[in-house]
Length: 226
Image (cartoon, rainbow, N blue to C red; front, side, top):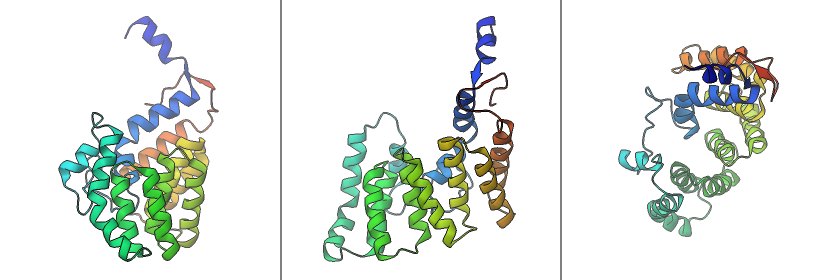
């Protein structure tokens, strides 16, 4: 690395440190859990499983940066046609509404996903899986506060729900730079489930967050995130 690169690496801000930590260290966790909060943990989180009714090729296409949002929306609309047809006959069916929400979520159409999840929760307000998914979709829409509100509701009902604890910690860290709150969530997760399948990832999250626990947004630091 040249002198310029060395100078740049020693002039990081707290915000940059957090962002790089999230991008580089959490990528697999984000894909494995924030893709759909209610989906079980995958052995290889960087390769998300396709949802029911969607092929692995379609799931991969949804992650392809060359596919436009318009194309993703069109694919989701097409895939959702059978479910939406049934919803015309059973407009308040929470299972059908959740299926529609999942289709749009997996196509990265998060606004439509939250709409269907909200309708599903009107019929089944205690469904913590759906509420976790909805909260995660709000996060992807840039609504961190709304996401945290929904995660809080999930965890009030089910305090040891692993996906909600993991996801809320990520939103607290990445969205609010609340290291203390994020670490508390992840430590609660590991305490509630010592054999959690992604334990090593969570431990890395905790260790990385603690390295920057004293950094304020915009503060200079000579310690890069990685």
